Length: 272
Image (tube, helix red, strand yellow):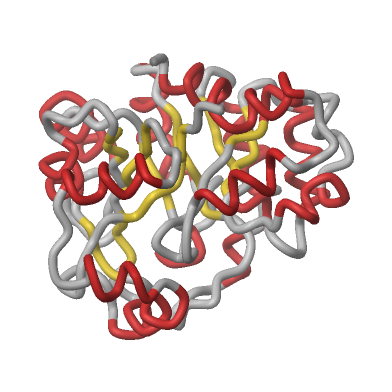
């Protein structure tokens, strides 16, 4: 079955903090040995194809206090010329440039196809009014924003910012903004993420980091809203992508629902 991975990180020791590299070394020795010093688009695409992935969203990250910094420029340059790789930007809250200016540049100059924001790593509440100009810009270009929600194992993170309920305000105030609640608020707030998709048509749940075996119990409304769930691996934070896909395929769900989760919903959001 076709697969679009909506959650892939690309970086090396140059980008990630030491404790993040330690986690990758323990969790994914293959990545650490092959890619921790240098990673190329060609090498990643070869790996993705071996894992059964047709396209992948490649994420930027501005979280110097927690995970590290992967700039928009690095991500876009990495993806350039490779249709299999889809660059997502991020916004630095440590920059003197306004959030709306950063967004405009990322979209118009660099060409990002969406954004990833990390409340638990950058210490902000998603419904902070100071971010509204950013949301306005992204909404005007009809692009999605992924929000990390729930917990994190990484040093420097602050879980209080990861409650999906803060996205209720954002979804209400920006009804055309496509919002992905990544990790579904794991593990404390699955119910809130599930509630958000019943209230807001523009909210989706990213299932990266959620065991497939717990998916139906965590989100009892999945079969009612199959068009709101998006597959992501969070590679290289997992040993491989193919086993995750196989676990989704083994769930007692209709083939059409599995297709929606694994690629159709992502394709629609990304306007492929």
